[in-house]
Image (tube, rainbow, N blue to C red; front, side, top):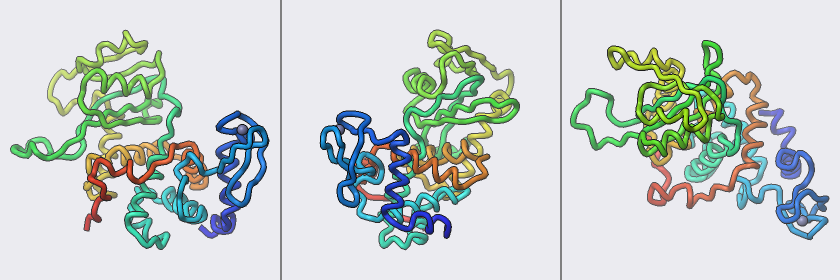
Amino acid sequence: MSELEARFSTEEACREYLFQLRWPEGFVCPRCGPQRCWPLGAARIECAGCGYQASVTAGTIFQDTHKPLTMWFRAVWWVTAQKTGASALGMQRVLGLGSYQTAWTWLHKLRRAMVRPGRDRLSGRVEVDETYIGGAEPGTAGRGAVQKALVVVAAQEDGKGIGRIRMRRVPDASGPSLLGFIDDVVEPGSLIHTDGWETYKVLPERGYRHEISKLKGKPEQAWDLLPRVHLVVSHLKRWLLGTHQGAVSPAHLDYYLDEFTFRFNRRTSASRGKLFYRLLQHAVAADPAPYSGMVKHVRGRPPKRNR
Ligand SMILES: [Zn+2]
């Protein structure tokens, strides 16, 4: 933390770092492409070609922030330092933010940056299966009203272990939901390993090789058929219970899935510095996430603290 504060003690140092991350090959004008640029006051730059005035934070999650970038950098550092998961309350305390709502908004902006659009797709051999998150445990009758979310998970095989993963909340187990996910996250030509669910049978028509493992006995054996995906799911459920006391509203589940995926895919990066760099790199590539858009599913209000 002290190393971070020494290196990024000024707004200028933070902006310069973001500039390097956003335009590693040099400034790219949103209007006329690669160009030289001039500084314009402290926070803005002007395109030498067309006069367009840009800033390094415009179009990123830092757009329109009223707080200093030095504080944002501390927030990113703190989030990447949390081994299990970050809570809004924790962030509020560490940064000394006056409002819980601000901490909650920041955390969700950073979660959104954890999954970058256009990242590499999985390839090779990939296990795919769906699971329910939340709601009643199997066997508890009469709890149909409890909200459950269907999540589809893809886990790349890495020898006997697990490579990278992807996951997404889907409305149902239909073709558009499951196959759309696979198209987005798995490279064509890969071998996809699933159970015998009907929807997956058209995978060969979509450019994938397909291996089906069918249950021969009890449903409990599903665990052994697709061991990687089920290991990921059990980690995910434990993480949601441990970090968020299981109190994850379906409207925000997407963010938690992104955070879990980000951490899981980097579980072996020993260096915190690398995570910090990666998250800031995503943050300047991500679309801005205005607060209003973030909470539209929950009637304009961040969730209450769960305690
Ligand atoms: Zn220009």
